[in-house]
Each structure stands twice: as structure tokens, then as C-alpha cells.
Amino acid sequence: AQRTPHREMGINDLLPRVLPSAGRADYDLRSLADGMIDLSPDHPDDPDRPPKRPRGDGHHDGAARHVKRKARIAVDVNGWISRASHGHGSRLVDGLHLTYHGRGRLAARRRAGGDGGDVGQGEDQEPTDAQLGRAEGDARRSEFVDGCVSFVLGRIEGLRDGCNARVLTVLDGATPPAKREAVRERSDRRKRAEERREADGDGGDRPASPSADRGDEAARTEAEVLRRISASKRAGAGGDQTLRREVIGRLLSELKRRRWPFLVAPYEADGQLAYLARGGGVDLVVTEDSDLIGHGCPALCYKLDAPARAGDGGREAAPGEDGGACPPPRLRGTLLLRENLGSSHRLDLRDFSDAMTAVTFVAAGCDYADSLKGIGIVTARDIVHGAFASRGGGGRGEEEDDGVPVLLAVLRGLYRSCHREARSELLPLDDPSKEGARRAYESTFLAGLAMFRHPVVYDPLLGEDLISNDVGPDGGDRSGVDPSFLRDELLLMEHGPYRDLVTDRTRLTEVVGRPFGGERARGVA
Image 1 (cartoon, rainbow, N blue to C red):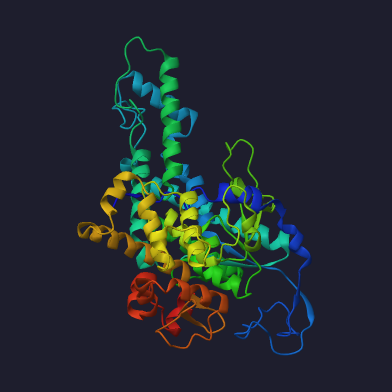
Image 2: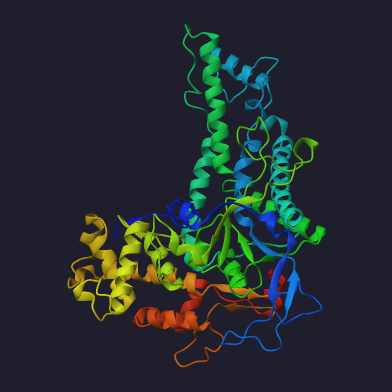
């Protein structure tokens, strides 16, 4: 069936619909500097330690007491790394394009009939990277890595100092099987942008006409330079995985040297952050990824401000760039609480459980599953709400879906509501020739839902990886699963294919990834 490829980090068009009304704009994180008040009996001698996991009934043992502690903030640092990579992408451009002298030489070459990329045979020719060897290219790469790492460290330091908080940096680990195709697509887009960065500008290989004046040549050269810089920012590290690993490796080394806490998730940071937040390990998650909403994270901060240097054209400067100290971030962002999600005006999510939200996100298209052509966040929301309302006796679903499992009702609603080209490949339901296309989409859909509901995470208290909210085989021990989660999950599991997926450990690990053993899990984290 025809599908709409996922393009953005998180859910397309979600945050612009939710944040203006459901979020608290211009929230100053420095208000957390006075600390948090807990009703906790766990560690009276060390209130900064995270609370123990509550019993299955949600209550703690022991005598409760009020304690004051520092706020605990977890940072989805992958977004900051990506922003730094794109913001400093221009550092990877040949310096000839970034100075007035170099641009003048480019214009002179054009007038002489050169292509702007090769050097002429004059005695004042500029040597290329090939002539200079790898020294200049290595210097640019080193400058790029320095800029990215300094940018990220500066933002972490601003949070630590400005909020007087305990800040945990969380990074992505391995790519889960369900996301590998999306990662390949993103890599292809970066490679195309990298190729545009390295390519000549529009008309760069055409000699100027004899009547062209210097003003025309300068304008054309300036346009080429701007195009190169724009392509460089889009590409960032591009498809150079060695360069990306170098940035992350340097960042981890600096975090270790400064003894700042960090955690590398077994796979996706999203599920890891939500696991920590739902368990009380952190009070707030700073991120740019809307997927955290679908994971049921209780408190999120989006669009965290950071200082921009005058004359940088809006690019955020790396802290300490040009040898100067960068002022701390203003630490203002948009606070989104899970409990306020239903107050969104442009996307009605009232009475939506975490399960309904996750199903909506998968239907609308996410990192793990493309949406059917013609299905966006609003249509997905309406279909999911109708399916769950019908299952609960609300009578808002299709009559032919009455009494069927909610996931099956959602899938049928998507088939009926998608673009006619995609619909022709999926309907009618009684056409056996369309069964293959429906099964293929359903398989991807259920895998995406499993990624939201059962990601592989690292438990810092146990010191091992586990599958979050593991429902295990039918009839197995589910005492460790949150009761509200289990109630929703049992409703989803009425659909046989989903139940077979999440209760079969072998099949589930082929989607979400395999938990690492104890020593290896601690080594990764």
C-alpha cells in the first residue's frame, strides 16, 4: 500500500498543534533551583537518591515524611548533538568559500572561465585539499568536532548551574530492528545534502559571458557560497559515521572527565527516558522529540532557549567559541505535562490514555512505521477515538466494527480513510488478493506500537536491561507491570496478532531488540 514516509523527529505536525494551548510557554527552569519537595520515606539521610520502586498497589512501605532535594532533570542529548552537527556543518566547507579573499578568487576564476572548484595554472593558484594532503581536511574535522562537543557541554553546564539540579545526560544506543529502515532513509538524505555541499554551485562550471561585469560575478559567487553553507548545515556530519562516532566519543570522554552522570540507552533514548520518568527517577525530561508523549512521559520541556551570538545569522554559538566564555542559557522552554495533554485546542486528546495516544502516533506515522497515504495526525486521532469509544459502548465507530478488537477497528478505519490510491490496494476487506498488502501494513503498525509500549531499557537499580512493561506469555507473572498500563494492554491484546507479538519473547526481540546481559548492559550504560 502507498505510504507517506516519515520526515521529522517525532510525530509530524504534533507539537505545533499541542504546545500552544496544552504547554506552558516561557517556563523558566531556574524556578527548579530551590529544589523539590517529596513525600518519600526511602532515603532520609540522602534525599537526592531516587525513590524505590513502589509496590504493585502504588503505595510505599514505611512512614512517609517530607524531604527537600535537588531537582532531577534528564536530557535527551541526541537532539542537541544533531542541532550542533547541522549548526557547525559550515566548518566542513573548504575555507576558500568562507572568506572575502577566497570568494574574490572564485569570482576571478569564473571570469577567466574556470569552474570555481579546480585551481588554474597561474603561479598564484590556491592549492586544493589533494595538494595540501589531508592536513586541512583533518583540521576542519577537528574544528567541527570541537564545536559540536563544546555546544552540547555548554548547554548541559547551563542546566546544572542555572537550575542547581542533578542533570542526567541520556544518549541513543544501538538502532532497534524496527527503526533500521528509517535510519537508512535519514542517512540517504544526509548523504544527498553532503553531495550538494561538495558539488559546485548552480552554474559553477559555466564560464561567464564576455559582457558579464564584476557585480554579476560577485553576486553569483555569493549565491554559490550561501548554497554551499546551507547544504553543509543540512548535511552536518553527513554519512560520515566515523565523524559522528568521533563527536559522540569525545562527548562521552568529556562527561567522564568532568564526572557528570550519563547513561547510554540499550537502544532508543526515548523509551529509556520515559522509563526513568514514569518510575520517579527523574522529574523532568528536556527533549525536542515528540515521541516522548507517546511513551507516556509525565513532564517534558521543549524548545529550551540557548544564547545566540550577534552576527551568527541565528546560529547558536558553541560555548567558548573564539576563546570567549559563553553566557549560560536563559533556560526558558515550553513545559508540557501529561495531565494537561487533553487541554490542547487544535488536537482534542481529552480522555486519551497512553495506549490511545501511542496507537494514534503510530497511525499518523512515526519513526517506526510510515502512515498510509492521506492519514495525518488529525485523521488518526479521530479513527482511534471512534474505535475506542465504540469498544466502550460510545457508539461512535462503524457498525461493521462493533464488537471487534479495538486495534482491528483502528486498522479498518485507516484502510477506509486513506487516499484512494492506497485504499484501492487494501479494500474491499473480502478481496483475498488485497490480504497481502493489509498484512504487510499491519505487521509494521504492530511493530511500531510495540516500540512505544515495550522498549528495551536499562534499569539502574537492577543493573540490567529489561523489556519495559513486559507482559510475558499468557498467564505469566505480570505483578511488576503498572495496573493502568496492564488494563490498557489487555484491551490491545484482544487483537490476536498483537497479543502473539508481545507475549512471544523471540518475536518481540526481533522488533524492539534483545536485552543485553548484566555485565554487557552495565558496560553499555
